[in-house]
Image 1: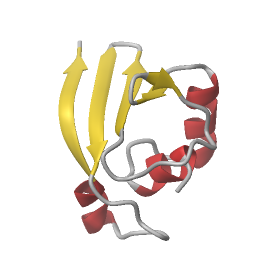
Image 2: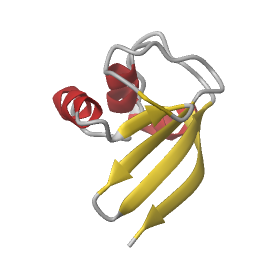
Image 3: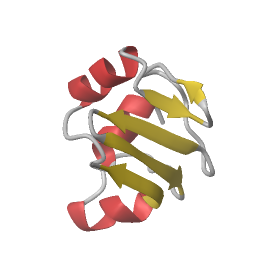
Image 4: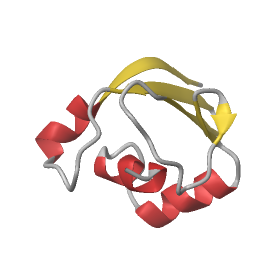
Length: 85
């Protein structure tokens, strides 16, 4: 699954266009490397999202094949660190 779609489906970022913009700005990295929106993800990848006031790092547990419900969204990843001011 593409990075921008995973961020939307997992509800880490609300909209896919916002995920595209944030990724193009270089504020998202996968396994320590800056990632473009089309980056293909797999189980075990670590995504770091830089916010203005900190950053969040998650590990992918499940890569869905399509959309998931709101209740299932948080089960797609595990939060490793969440630092916000």
